[in-house]
Image 1 (cartoon, rainbow, N blue to C red):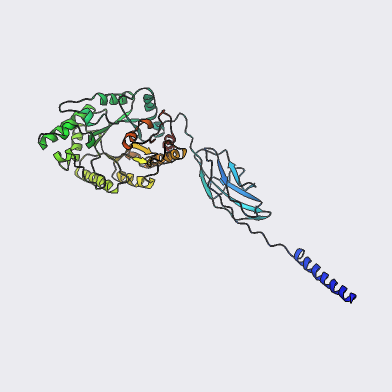
Image 2: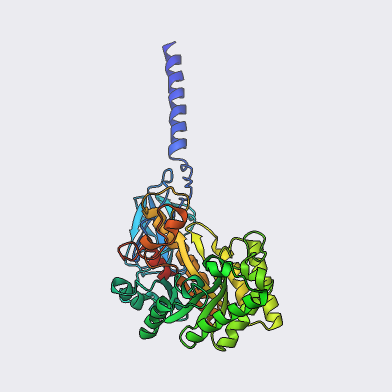
Length: 450
């Protein structure tokens, strides 16, 4: 009985030993399978560095990081060809400003290496030369700013001369200021602005001869015949354009002549007295007074109001076909930090270029607070505004040089923007803050030129 039990136990022990030996010594463990890491978008991007990071992979002991200037990784940055790392992030340093880099990685466990992660593209930021100015950087077109005759000294003067190559009178070269009553002209403010441009070698753009919102009361209430009204307008245009011949390079002859939405002619006193062709007549008056001055049509919502945009270009095409003088189109560009899309700005601008006319982005400001959700300019909103300014400049800078006229900013500093009164709440739409400091938007302008 005891012998039988011993034999049974011996056999059982042998089976166990055999099974154990087969499982441990007679074969190999199954190979580990590693998933590929997920590379995150770069963080803390500067002009010379960025932070790469990635997801943890189950059972990975380390990671191999590649960084390259080539999306195909034909070569790698020194020290970043399969750099072995245990951490889930790495600070990449000693990079060049405004350059595109790529990174990817694989997970490792012993001799097992995963497939590659997704590839992340990173562009380091732009650091401008501290001696660079807007007008120096924009060497193929004029950089303009709207001005007032009483603010041409002190820090205004310093910044205007340093940064800008063109000026536009914000409101002092409009009819209600220059021709306030029948038989009376007041050229004092306009003369001061034009002289400032002359004295400092700065281009002067005239704005604007005819605008419904700057029509003086005596013109609105004109009691003479329609022909007498037209003669009066011709005399006014001839007087002003002749006075500044050779000094004012260009004019917004008619400003905002078409309605929003419908694209119809505004039913202004000019249309009522001079007929539907009053814009063409005004353009002819200007050309007769100055054979060399550039003639622009200027309007707002030219990117976002498709019906109005179509109507403007229908008018422009008609002028070209009839030989009515027109040299360019001005898009005012009163826009927001998140609207309109760059592609829409490009598409509308292309329509000017297709007609071989000059392009003027004539009154640029970029609202940072369109929804009244801020009481002060946040860092995030400031960067969003910067990005939109950059897009606008990229579009303008990308058009053929022969079609570029000017990119004009509508005001110098945030605290004096017309938008504060117009919308009745705080905003910061310009390139300089209320203390004359350059904002992110200023650097967005420079980046758009790169």
